[in-house]
Length: 410
Image 1: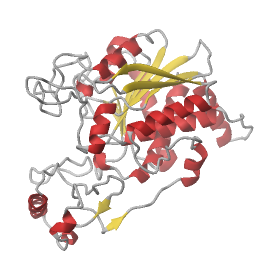
Image 2 (image 1 turned 45 degrees about the horizontal axis):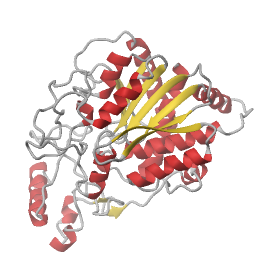
Image 3 (image 1 turned 180 degrees about the vertical axis):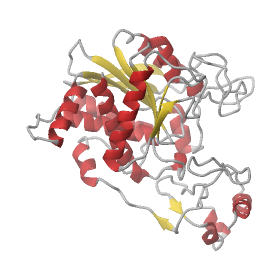
Image 4 (image 1 turned 90 degrees about the vertical axis):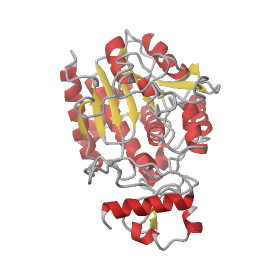
């Protein structure tokens, strides 16, 4: 079916459903006749399984059938994908007493319970720190994993600044669980690959790890229960009556630049002023207290399979750009060896992922650690933010590999 006809059919289904269909561009698909929204995604209402279908196949569905779905995708064949890969790894890193299984996307309560279980199970190496509270009174919790050595460098990792990004919190919790599992494992004496892993794990033990798995819990829960593609937090603007600020436009570097808006009703709303939101203020306060020993900062998000580093507002270099470029390239090669994942790397500006008021640029400018990155996870646009849950473990392995690369550079 030609692209214009396909989009016409999508619009027809949208009218049958009586709801708006959101389109976004796939990074792997060029613009076609000025239309940049292919492919689309088709998601079940319960959010746990993703269906694929050709548009031709969808024409045979009745209006009643169509009401089962939220979004549409030009995929391959009609199927339900229930494949869960790396089952043995999931079992290995499972934390007894936790509901976290990485076979589905969990809600905020499950993530909170997972962190509490880690604290109770591994109290010798784990600390849980509340760095703030959201507008809806949800805690912003950082989990610290450390051997207690005061000479360690620290690395801070956050996930889920964008509410609709369910993958990065899931992938990060998997990486945390794997890190703690390996932390307590006896040192191996194997040669070759085993030795390489042992050296890398030794480097990871020399780091104080600070993880914020859910940087936007209010928005995340709203995305799960009300608006799947909601991106902001749940702050309220009394003048417009609209909710939410885009937290990755709310930091005080390049704030109010091109790529953000002053309209509180838009997705890219930057806030009334920089650090107007409790979530961004909490991160600012916590990282400012780590200035003397923060060696690295990573902000995880989806999608795009890209590792970026400052700057995002213009094409000029940082003092540490050589280290950033080298580390990113090593990570890209490591991810390719891991599972043939194809990531790109470069400055946010050159990767066309510039975001005024983003957290990474602010950390680089105001805190100045050696390494500052954004890691945009799977995929390259086929599913976008609607990635099926069977990719969680694979993405978690990629996050862990990236963190291992960072540890070896510090």
